[in-house]
Image (cartoon, rainbow, N blue to C red; front, side, top):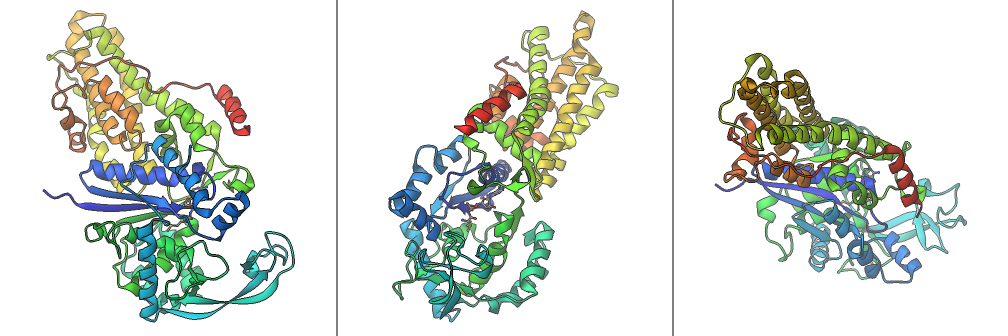
Length: 533
Ligand code: MSP
């Protein structure tokens, strides 16, 4: 049967600095959602990329004495650059786009021309405050005490010829869209913000070309103008599928996009300018935009200029990609802001991974190893009094998990899994296998207890796979699933709906500790040293 397509995107990142843990947060959660959909049998197209153009990059490259292309190439493809980071973090993107890719540039020229030809782009004058030494336009609000925010010198009122997009024309249609599709923009609070702050007060036309710098897509019918970065950037979501180019040809398969995952500060571009441009060129609208919150550091947004960035590479090297991915997904509510700190990260790794699931796996596998020489027996004696609660919690888990995952509430899906692992640890204390093991006549009961535990671990592990792909694979090996002939049958999503699918005579394989414990004080000291380098 043909798989159902599912198209999910991250924003394309500015390659002006190395990425920090806040950028990684957005991509990790999107990756988890993409892996979840794949696990459920969808044909997923997960797109990410980089937003290579703009005056900021042009200036930084100039300061570094290299060309803008060299500058962005370094940050994207250089050692420990963006591509390396995504590899280290196990980001399973299906396609990656750069706005400097030739096919994208050509498509942007055509899209811009189409909007011009249909009358939605017109020539006008861009008025602003101008800093002559810096050759930069600024809006009133960008000024620093009335002066240029870059060099602090005096600015003058100035104007520049520019093209404008008739965004104003689409205000009503966008309000209608929000009304007809109340889940177009989530969480709901973001939609109210758009309506009250931007749509109700009246939409302005947007300046979509500049002449004072050249690092961008040229307007081919008016040399000297370059296309505004957001027009260039937003259209990546369709050019990457082959819209107005022959590089790819799956636009018909994947568009309209199922969900654009974006940070809260760029919701405005995705839920107003983007639909307006799509309406202008006659392309159907994406089904959903999800605006997530920020990771804050001591209550402030992480940024290079504030000097409070956390390098995800350092964390992944110390704790592994799985633990960092897990922490980001488990600790923060995807739609709202949350505070990042290293202590929280290490404590969470210790409590949830090492103490909770890690302990459950190692205790269970060790007991099967010790009491049954690694292979459980066919004869097992269940106890309705003791087993029912655990079995029903594990059997119902997938429904709760699905509901949360479908609502982008990864943190809640994980919370449900950890309720079950905690319940299983408690079950060990209640059933006291070490006491059962003392008397040969309890062997059948002991086998059932350990079997139930292995089944709980199997179900939880399959559901955790999108979050911690590597560790989950190791767990499946330890509990003996991976070695079975029908291993796939038991590690696929469908199998989590039934308790008791594992063969009764499963053979476990004791292995390394999957989630080691860390000494919080030592780690904090080491991270402090690493970050100061
Ligand atoms: N290039 C634009 C996006 C164009 S999409 C057509 C851009 N790039 S960015 O590199 O500045 O940001 C990329 C994403 O990282 C955004 O969604 C942004 O919200 C997210 N984050 C940047 N800092 C963040 C945190 N501290 N916390 C969470 N996400 C943050 O915007």
